[in-house]
Length: 329
Image (cartoon, rainbow, N blue to C red; front, side, top):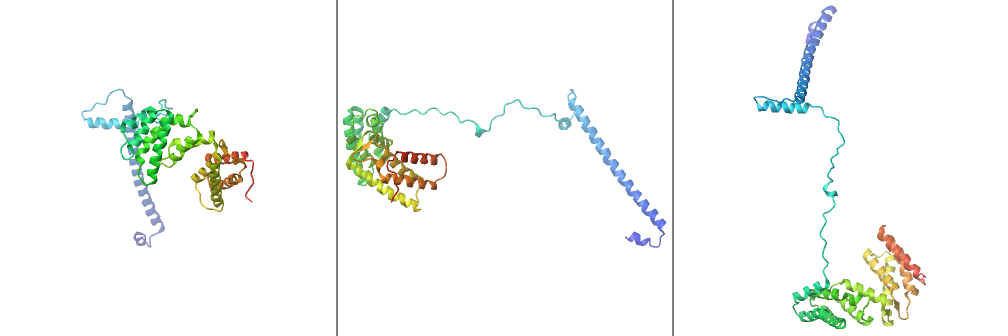
């Protein structure tokens, strides 16, 4: 700006000549810088070409300075054009979390004789140790009827002690060993005992502080093979009435869980599928019919899935067996 002001009064021709010269000077400087850049680029291309030639050459790189030789080798390697990728023939390893788990050695199933001998070797101690030991010995050495009698008396003593608040949990492994050993006599194909003996054992086992697998099997065996006497039918009917009152509360939006629902449904199922009852047919029971209808209404509280489908199929199958399907009046 100062230069322009200094030239006020100068003719147009002189100003034009001045600016023209200034532009030419700038263009010349720009051309010089461009030539330097082109020269540097040309030099870089020459170095890259030389590096490629060195890489292709079969002669080893020899130099008195190992550092220089190493640097040239790296430069040549980096300048080598990459070939097109070809499909790999090497089998890739699967990610570790997709690999099949290691095969574990098969778990040896404990023989019932081995289990019984193991408990005998441990020799139960305490207040009831002698009684439990005699039960173990009877299971191994005595006849089935003697063994059952000894099991009944032992379970009764432990159940009474448990009702009094005594700790009898330490003897439960011994009772489990006896039940496992005597399972063929209790729930096998040819059980040498009647309903009275089996039910007596069942009631005693239910009073002990452990749920044995044989308890459910024994209950199922009794229901499937023996007729329920009239005095026990009354108990079944009372349980059904209490259950119906509970399920009616569910329909009034009282809370209930899947496990409780399953327990009630299975009780009704076992009641219907039992071998028989003295003077009672559950298929004519209106309480059971209403229970099944209300079970169906309560299903909407659960998520869909295979378990829900199974519950629905169970209810539908049981309803098809009912001879009385009247709703509550």
